[in-house]
Image 1 (cartoon, rainbow, N blue to C red):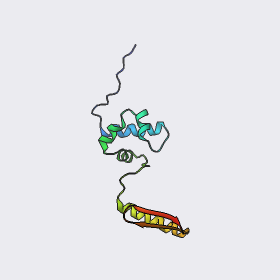
Image 2: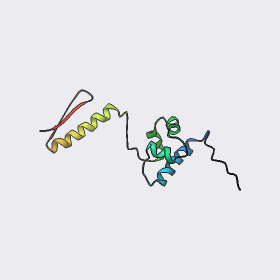
Image 3: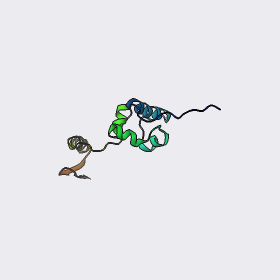
Image 4: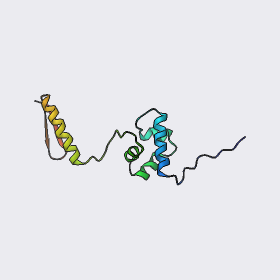
Length: 109
């Protein structure tokens, strides 16, 4: 019987982590991965990836995968998106009112 060692996971490079993300996404035939999917199929734990790159989304982006869930979106970007949506909704006859930085009321005219 041949004895084989498990792959060494300690002190791996950033590229090894990113390649593993891509490998698992390809294995699952997906353009992105969730934390749960990576924890189930990945070589490393998702916390290792987050600790190395700061966030899971940063790792997905660096590996060339799609980021689907965004958090901590800058207020300027959210306001720009609200303006875009309000213009579109106004054209459809809907009324959107916003007050303050986070309070939004959406309703029909």
